[in-house]
Image 1 (tube, rainbow, N blue to C red):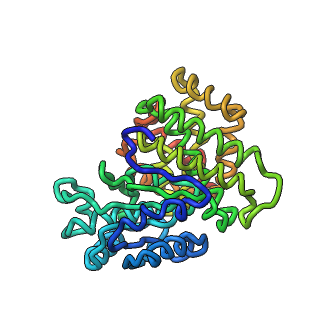
Image 2 (cartoon, rainbow, N blue to C red; image 1 turned 90 degrees about the vertical axis):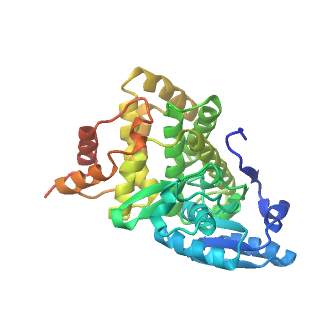
Image 3 (cartoon, rainbow, N blue to C red; image 1 turned 90 degrees about the horizontal axis):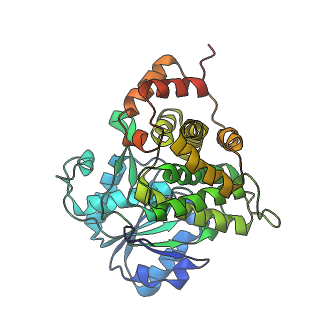
Length: 376
């Protein structure tokens, strides 16, 4: 792992059983999960078995929803502080692990208002240490410092991040993804694919992040679109064990890559679809990924890098431009007023400058109109 990513990664079939000392270092643990995934995957019971065996007190907060709000993280942070937690354990997908990072910060910073977390002048104390146990192969949140939170008052998402918000350790076991259905698994994989492609093209990339992003994106393409290693027994989501392992490792690599670079414009444009239309995050990003590739391939710098991606994945530009949005399956109409609202909410996001091709406000409008025509 590169020096700028301090998280200790343990990626194996029995990551928790093989590395229990990371959990037993806690004195009082605050476990952060959603209602279903952590239990259904077996990850929650694996974590609590270790804590119970070591006699470590813990409290379980299972109120995390998709697109967690800053307000819910604020309330859970107060609970963690009242419990006297010294460690936060996030179990689940990106929502749970993102929420765990914010909860760890709120637990150590008694702030007046939830949105104060975004002000470094107010959120001054270091967060509690976070241990991440991912149960999806999507966000790679276990490998980066980002906590993406919904701000209901502004109807948008904001990112809380700090150099100290990286999980101290990540216990990554692909078996926890085998209880996921097909639709959710595909959305997660599209999110990780977007991370890989957007990080690979980023002007902020380093030799390490480029290699990680390239491997992640090509691996996901080969599994998701080419069906590599698809022979044999499949789980409820239609994936073999080998495919699940490949997707989990690729998601982790992509998470490491965006820790260095951040993401590109499909992310802020996609956030609007998630916040206002309920489109799952990975599919929302995938809806714009074809346009992201098409625009970046139109200039020499982008075309040169993308040729490496196409070669590694064994795909053509036309295939990626066409098939990624097709798999995202995002279909609805947007009015001119909705498009204007969406663009105004996200037009100042830093993501737009994070690729060789930098889109303008008018291109944002045109892209929404092209992808989601108003046929009324």
